[in-house]
Amino acid sequence: MIKTQDLRPTAKVVDGALILSLPDAISPVVWRWNLGEAKASALEVREVGKDGNYKLVLKTPRGDVQDVAPFENKAKAMSALLAVSHAMENPHGSASNDSGTVHTITPGRTDLKKSDGMKLLGGIGAVALIIVLFTWLGSVAPKRMDSNAATLNTTATPTGTSDQSGVPMSADDFLSGK
Image (cartoon, rainbow, N blue to C red; front, side):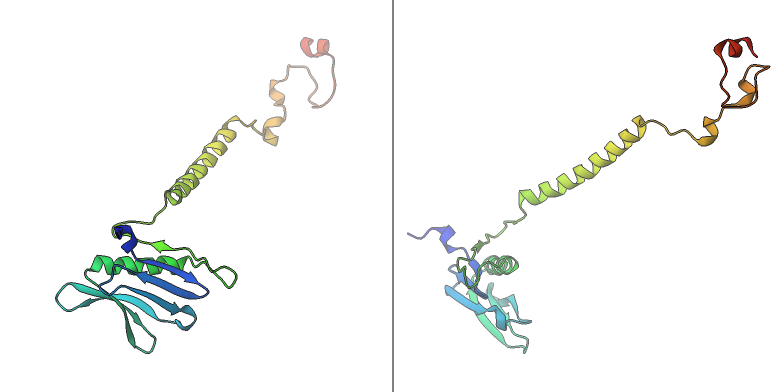
C-alpha cells in the first residue's frame, strides 16, 4: 500500500544535476536536469486549458519550452516547484559525495525554521542588553572633574592666608586664619 507522504515531490542536487521525483503528478516521473547547461533557464507552473490542470515546464534561454510533468491542481504543481527551489538554494553533493539532501515540500507548509526566528530575537535582545549595560555603566562610573572645577576657589580661603596655592601650611596656621 502506498502512503500519501510517499507521493510528495522530492528534489536534490547531486554532482551538478537536479534530480526531481514527482510521484503525485498525473504522469509520475523522475526527471534529471544538468545544471551546468541551465544558464538562464527557468522552471515555471503553467495552467493547461480550462480543466484546472497545471504543468511544470522548463523554459530555456532560447525560448524553448519543455514539459516536465502535468498535475491535477496548482497546489501540487507549486509543491514540486518549491521542492526544486529549496534543492537549488541548498545544493549538496559533489563528485566525492553523491548523497544529496532530499527536499520535500507539502502544500501550505512554510520552511521558516524556529531557529531563524530565535536568531533574530536573540540579536535584538543582545543589542538591547548592550544599550542597557552602557547606560548603567555611565550612571555608576566616577565623574571626571573638569580642570576648572579642580582648582581651589581663593575666595573661600580664610582671611589672612596666603593666596598662593600649593604652599604647605600647618593645620594650626590654617585654623587660626594665618
